[in-house]
Amino acid sequence: PMSMTLIHTVGHISFVLTALSFYVRDILMLRALAIVSGIFGVFYSFNITVAPLWLTIFWLCVFMSINGVRIFNILRERQGISFTEEEQELFGTIFRQFAPVEFMKVMRIATWKSVQPGELLATQGEEMDDVKLIFNGEVAIERDGGEIAHPRDGTFIGEMSFIKGGAATATVKTLRPTRYVVWPKTELENLLKRNPTMDLAMKAVFTIDMVKKLGGDENESG
Image: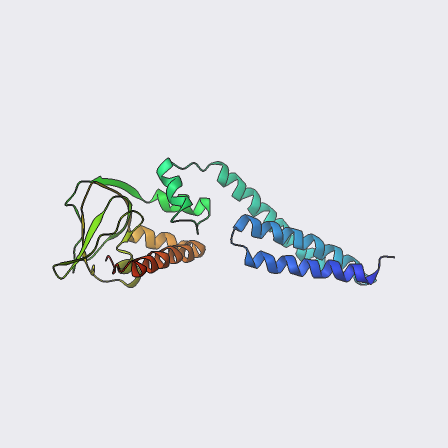
């Protein structure tokens, strides 16, 4: 007969793997750990008592099946993902918090634009109906008629208006040829409402941007 020490060890491993699955960020790894944890859990439930714990075993198998189906769907979705060179750069830098499928959904509702120097991207006191991200370029941020910052690549414009609502808190004007990404506010709001994990990831991206601005003595850009 199998020793109780080994059986209890298997049980501990099952719970440790479950705890690890809550810690990891990658959804594929999370579900894989959950399946492995379930396998150890089934083994433990089958051997811990004279009669197997069939109720526990049944539900562990259900959970493993659900995670198995989701892993299959995730892998199938990822096979159909292809990013442009510019999108790949954004995904590897600013949007590291996002899973590939999530980033693809965000970029589907985005538009790329290229403008010349002197283009207004936001006007202080006016409502903003989008969120912009400077991909390559430089802008001047003006508040109450005075320039307060010259942010460049990787800077969001309109994120504070998106988070808190209200009008733009500053005027933003391009200083040189600038390429940027723009998301319609309503479409982005609806997308994030439907996807809680994406909402958390986007909030993390905005937080990093605001910390960067504060660290560089750059105030809000709308």
